[in-house]
Length: 205
Image (cartoon, rainbow, N blue to C red):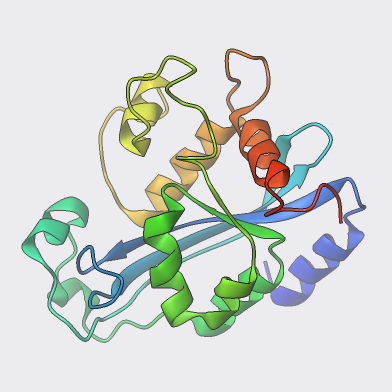
């Protein structure tokens, strides 16, 4: 979808509807100070504030990026990307900025990891509220032994084989957020409520 079309969709949304972006990064390693992003995936979706439900996907983007530092062997074992895969690749900054501009807030699974990597590349992201699908949902209270994304998506039969590529993780996480917790609400509703309760996200726009 073009930026113009996406913008018109967002403008048509009334106060009861919002837009959020779920994102994920794959990196050269685990330090946001010395390692770099090699893959970024983003999905912009529309949701209902009142129902706490994800309505539809508005836009998505996934891109690779050649880093300026080597890939740590441990990170390479996770995502499988090599320097040969990344050589000459660049993120589409215009697409990324457009999606960020249309996002009322950003979500990542373990946002304390993704956020500093993303904000280093895109300062705009530091001025947008963030929520965390790992820590803003009471997975252990709901009876899950682990809050790791791969464990949760397996528990919900969303995906049985682990890929650990950015867009697969984002798509699976959004599907997870659509599911209902034992309390009867969607997991997205719980995440939204937690982020509203501590003031990260307004209760309405």
